[in-house]
Every structure is written in structure tokens, then in C-alpha cells.
Image (cartoon, rainbow over all chains, first blue to last red; front, top):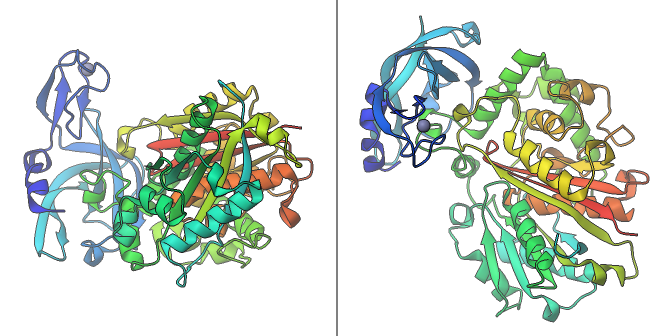
Length: 130
Length: 388
Ligand SMILES: [Zn+2]
């Protein structure tokens, strides 16, 4: 991923800032530019999300994509935040065999991956069990 | 539909690692077979739609619709590439069907092709992952098997689906592929082979995953009146449906089925005036074993959550209540992504004509194809009927 493409999303990724629609009150993450429920009638504003949630589902990655090879095996999961939105993330600092659906997790700031060609290292959110 | 549409010719290459065949050779081989099967000349073709996911990433070549028209000797007819990730082929067929139904064109080729083995397998996996959300899924370390593993785990949690039931999908599809000369694999496997195969993203193992494949397939779409004049069983396109969903999995409420499949099927069933119980044979999008289990539920062959059980009971085998993926499916026949949606039609047309050899489903009159893009951001369903 080219560097500007990553930097553009830094505020959202580092601080977990999504959007909230003032019309339907739905909290959206990843951030959106139009409310999918209200469309042009929506009123989107930045919204800082809670840093806790629970695991909706997970898998244990043994064959990693480029830039993640040194992290296997790692837990890939969908986490539902207390505010409602879900996101795709990794669950770290635990034995992959001890992860269950429904586990409570909290955000931690970590190295995400690296671009093997340019040597750029990306940071952002992961989660760990509470 | 404005006017009745039929498939009058089908053709495909063998699927597999076709190191000795180029992109150009593959599409011409499939096209020539389809035209020969239709018994028409290239001069009669009015237009072409090409399903191709990512020639840019796989062979560094875009603008492939023109390239194909050129190398098939079909210039200056209109040729259009259609892209919907792994559903590109199904979308190309739908465009061809709409073009003929509208009366704008009479003879239209719907083609599908992917040349995937000219790059290393890690690059191919990366190219496939571009069908997921790069910014919010792939960024976090997700791959395609990873995203389907997330669905598999949730399906197991909600419905008690087992890894053995998923393995049975692979066993069945490999067994069917052994009877298909065009299939990539002619190798029977057991449930134990699947369970003991190397982990990819658990709960999915290597033998739960469809392979990387080269292949091309073509069908000729024409007005039904032309098909009825031919000296063989006419196969009509009775219904077509397509739907979209969020590109990322985490934006969906349900992780145990594909809403796009449900919506596309509803549209196709309504147009065809049939329901799930009327389908005699189906080719569904089994990019991973869990995908077939979800598909047979979403298409209405059983209730949500009972796909594993239906598979375990053998109801989806040839001779079962609803034979699924008689061709070997994506798992056994191979999955050259852009070609898959068209190759599914090749199988259903052969089944309805009674030309499927050892794979033949006795008395098949109504067939269905189901093609999915990404994790279900796109789905397309077609229903075919014998027209005699
Ligand atoms: Zn809204």
C-alpha cells in the first residue's frame, strides 16, 4: 500500500474515529462519506469510538499475506465495539487456542505490517483480551 | 423478459495449470469450441462480453476485451469487459442475456477467462485479496481464506456445522471432478485427507480451499426462436438475478449467509416462475467448502443452518435430492476466477441436454448457476430450462 494511502487514514486508524449520523443516530466505522441509511438526508460527523468490544467471529491465520509472514499464527477477528460498529482486526497477546466467540477485548496500538518492498512499517489498532 | 433467450453453444478449455497455453490461446480455444457447438460462424456474432477479474495483476494486460476481439478475428464488433471479482463470468452472461432479450443483438458471446499461474502463488493470493476491502480488511492481515474462515467459524457457532461436514463438500466435489475431463483434479480424497491437510486459516485447511487455476469458457447466447430451429434440445435462460452487498464482511449483520445470494436468487426464481424445489441440478460458488454449505441454504435448497446436514446426508451428491456441483465445482474442477461463472453454465447446459456423460443427473430439466464475487459483495444467479 503506497504511503499517502496509509497516512490519509491515520487519524481514523490511530484514534478509532468513525462517523455518526445526526439524522438516524447510527454510528459507522470504518468512517463513511454518506450515511448508507439516510443517504443525502444524513448528517455525518466524526465520532470517537469506544475502545472495547467483543469477538463476533475469528480465524487462526497460518498462511499470511505479504508483510504479515513473521506474525503467524495470528488471530484474525471481527470485533463488535460497544458503540455498535464492527471491524476486522487481530487479537494479540494470547494463545490462539484460547480465543472464543463472545470474549471481551480492548484496543491496543501495535505494528500492523510492513511493506516488504519499501520497508515502510504500518501502525494501527489491534485488540487483546480483557 | 422482453424476448426469450437461449444458450445455443458452449465450450471451455481444460482447467488447470496450463503453462503451455497463453491467455490468447486459451480464450480462442474456448470460443472456437462454443461456436462449433452452436454450429455458427464468427461472422454471425454481433457482440461479446468478457468476464475477467484481473488480467492487469495476473498478466499485466488490461483492455482485454479488445485484445480478445482482435485475436478472435471478430473486430469491429463491440466487445466489453465485465468485472465483479470472482463473479465476473456470471455478470458477463447476464449482460449478454440482457443484450439479446432487449433485441439489440441476436448472437452474443459471453466469455470468461483468467490466466493465474503466470505469477507466483503468493502474488495470485494477493491479487485475489484485492476483491476485499483493501483499507479495512486486507490492511488488518485478512486474506480470502481468512474472511471465509470468519464465516465458517460463525456458522459452526450458530448452527453446529462441523469441520467434517465441510470436508464432505470437498470429498463430493473431487469425486465429481474425476468424471469431468475438463477438471483440474482427477484425484479422489477422503474426509480424513481434508481434516489432516495443512492449516490455511483455521477452521479452513488447504483442501477446504479452491485452487489457483488457468482456464477459459465461452457460451453463445441467442434468441430462443433460433435455438428451437436447431436439431437439438434447446436450453432457455428462464431467469437472471444479480445483487450487491457491502464489500467488507464486518459491515454485515449476518455472517452465516450471503444476502446478495438470497436477493439474486429471489429475482431469478421470480423471473423463471420456479422455486428451489423445482431445481434438478445446481452449480454453486464453492470457493471454500463453507461457501457451498451457505449457498445451498441461501438458494433455498434447505433451511438456514441445515446445509451441513444436507451435505452429510448425501442429498447434494449425484443421485441425491438436489445434486450440487456435478462438474466438480470450483474445488475440483478449478477456479480460474473470471471463467468460473461461464464454466458453470457449460455444465448446466450439458446436464439439461443430457450430454454430461458419467456425471449426468437423470431427467434434469431445470438447472441453476450461482456465482459470487469476493465475500459476497456481488452475487449472480441464473436459471435454465429445457425448451422442448
Ligand atoms: Zn443516517
